[in-house]
Length: 297
Image (cartoon, rainbow, N blue to C red):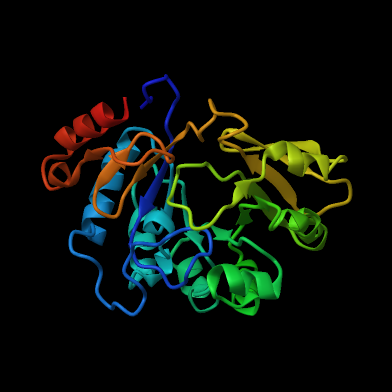
């Protein structure tokens, strides 16, 4: 399966909840919070997600990433390990990844690993205790416990996703680099894409060039993660990569598509809106594949 510009698609991001368990200094969340025990009306069931993934797999999807809707927390979805198990049983699916803020991971890592989860992407905007509390309302100790649990249970790679801002968190570039000397983590410096979400306050994105300027000895390590290059500092255990939709506007993680928690399929992980495939999921899988291909291409 290829998208409208001819890129082969093999990676599907699926939002499994719209609930969140922390605040965000940067954005204005418009999602139900963790105190709401039930999922919002219209959220795809595990059965619907699994059927959809069977169709996607037949079209060439090999990797599935489970995440929250627009900053929601995937681990708030009850019994998520069940979905992991079902997806790993789908023919053609080679890898299931979890994207999380890490706050609930320490209790969930062992079961997720046992049921087939391969790796985790942990979103962490700061390594400083006071600053992380200011940004998310969460303690760095809770997130570190989640990172440690993922490492201990063999969820590899552990990817630490961070979005830094000029004049606010850009002083943490070397702190994230230092982690790669201490642990076999992959640190992903991700540019914030203006207009990708509603901002709260005046925050200026930090371009890739500013980060690279602080890392003059960074060298490609001969590996790739999807369609982007992995780098390494001499003597480091871990790796570094960049996702830079502002610096490289033609590069938008082109091998990826996304499915919202409500069944909206987008041909890009950066686009809002798309095609509602929920009705098609309830029907014949051959027709579902046709709907998916038309939506992507």
